[in-house]
Each structure stands twice: as C-alpha cells, then as structure tokens.
Image (cartoon, rainbow, N blue to C red; front, side, top):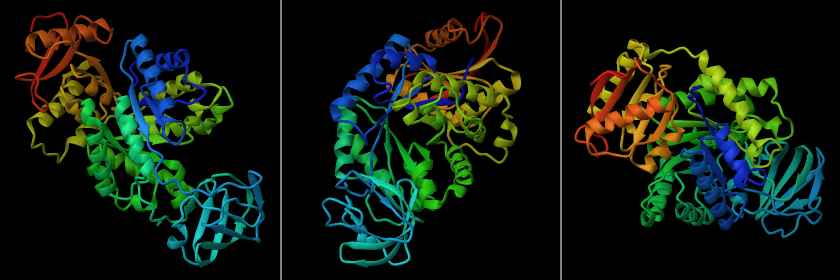
Length: 478
C-alpha cells in the first residue's frame, strides 16, 4: 500500500550493519539520521556508505540527514561518575571545577553563570532534576535542590523558559558541517536555532562546504528553544523544513505546552510550503519491548492526523533491541491513520492566489486529480518544487515525482504523499511522459484504463519551468 507519511530513523550501534540497514529500508525507512552528538567522522562516513549500499540493493533512494549537536549545555564529570542530589540541600555549579562531587559539579559551558540570576530555575537531565538558583558569585552558581535524584556525567542543563545565550553553531558544528558535506548528506538539521539568522548562517556554511561536491543540502531547523517559538515564521522562511524536537522544547516550555505547539508548528510549516518532522520518544518503549504502548500508537497516529510529513525514531532504532520491527510497526500505524484522514482540498483553495505559473499548475493538477478520481498524479520535476507544493494539501491521490536528478530524488524522500522515482531522460517531452507512465504502471501503482494526471515543463530540463497539465488514461494514445 502507498504510505504517505515518511519515516526517519537514527542509526547507531543497533543498526549500523549492512544487513540490518537493508532490512530497515525494506521495512519502510525513508531517511537515515546520523546523530553528530555521538561518534567520530569515520563512524559517520562508514555508516553513510552502508546506507548508500543498502539503498542500491533495495532499489530505491534513501536520504541522509546530518543532525548537528549544537550548544548542548552540560554538567562536567564526577569523581565517581555520578552523585545523588537530595531535595532541600545546596548544590553548586562551578565553571572552574574540574571534577565534581556531592556538593558541586563542573560546567562545559563556562559562560552559564553570566546568563543566570537569583530566582531562575535550572532543569537537569531532561527535567528530572530541578535546581533553584539562589545567587551567582563569580563563576559559581549557588542553588538549592528542589527535585533531587541521580546526576551522572555530562547530563544536560536547561533554563526554565529558555534565554541562554549559547550560539546555535559551535566550532564542533562547523567542523561537522564540513564532514557531512564530504559524505554527500541531503539534509542538515540545526540544533537550538533562536532565529532566522542562525539558519541563514548554517545554510551559508553548508553551501560553501558543499560546493566542491556540487551539493546544496536542505536545511532543517530543530525547534527546541523557547525563544524559537515567537520567531517561528522567520525561522520557517529561512529553512527548508523544521523538526518538532519535543525533548528539549518540553523541558524549556513545560510538557503540557508541547501538544498544542506541535499542532501549530505543523500547520505553519504546511502553510509556508515547508516540510515538518515530528520527533522524540515516539516509540520509546520499543527500545526494550517488541510492541509499543497504546499511548505511543496514539502519539504517532495523532502526528499523522496533524499533517506531519515524517515521524522520527531516535534511540529506538539507534540502540534498541528491535530496530526493524519498530519501523514496521510505525509504518502500519501511519497507514491506518491516513485511511481516516479527511481531505479538505476545496476549503484549502478558498481565498488562495498563485502568482507563479509552476505553482498554479501544481495546484490545478491536485484539484483535477481529486475531483476526477485519478489513481495518481505524476510530476516530471527537476528541483522537486512541484511535488512539494502538491504535498502541502491532502487529497488521498498519491503523487509520483520523477526526476533525472538524484539530489532532488533524495530530497523528496521527506515530502508527505510523494514517491520519488528516477527518470532517465530530461530532453524529449513525449519520451519522458511515456517513460513516466511506464514507470508508474510497471511498479503497480496504476493499470490500464486508470486516469492519471501529468505535469511537465516545456522546454524540459529547467528548474521552476512546470507549465503543462495533461490528463491521460493508461493504455490510450496521448
């Protein structure tokens, strides 16, 4: 069956062999995430090679996303590896401390004392430990433990409500961008951007690093800072897509605020013609269990019903016991949720104006296919923009985007309801259209007598040149 919602999975120790990767791709994996918070450049290079090899064996393109670590603010290391903090007791975060103990811990971000004042609340280890800031003396942050627990080496620190000044791109991120471009990745995910400027800077660095390889990656903003919420439209405008990164975001704004923010972010992304990934703890229990909880099934299904382009796995596929089963389960949930989705295409088009010819053709094809009951929309596209515009509206008509460009084929791996396929020619229109129909029929997506809506640009081979809409019945001359 045609699944509209895409699946992103992180690869790690549990999923880095060619055999497991091939099984994951066959189970429905669309985009592989390389987490640059862990591993060396050589680790990422080997994994990227395994992904490309497995995709070739599977007979389809799989995209690769490089996820930058960003300014993760952490405590330092402890003499014994960990301490247990007790509610009501004092605890000091000390930028000058080399090795922590029961009374104090070091900081990897030395400027943290400059960002804080008495009354601030610090959340450690994803919010499991809460510290109330009493005073700041030089490089020391004196706190009282509000909620205690076990604190081990290098656990993260957030300030409730956000507001930390750490830049979105660290020196490590800049080096990782160069590494990612040498691997030929398709997407760069930027952690903790605060505004559009952060994304513009990341794009410029990625384009420069990618120039020797002829690559301009799609840029993804991970929305995980409280400050990013009021700046969301600007961040969207500066990005190709966003990730609803519910982990750090929940720590900063509170768990209860995240579901409504998720719906708002997905809606804004679609309205801005950007793609969106929903991430964090979607199938968390499947790290250890062969089946998900009912709550996790509902979470994935609700993200689909919200209109997300993709759902993402982190530790479930990187370190879990059941990486392949997790993808199979997630794919089944997505398919079931999509069956119940109501198309509001007519309402979507009310009060809409299109100033570009190619965008008007894309919307016309979507509208026509929906009302004529076409089995498929086939878009011949260079850049993938036509398919992106169509995919912003839900119609239950699958979209097949055929392109001669491998980069465009991989980029479209994240677009909802779009299946990207390779087209051998981009010169003769009639030959290309015939090849497109044969490809879709050959893969079993349409059969003789079915109605198919085609879009193409004349002359062919120019990005942004889609200007023709054609309606054909398979098997009849056109």
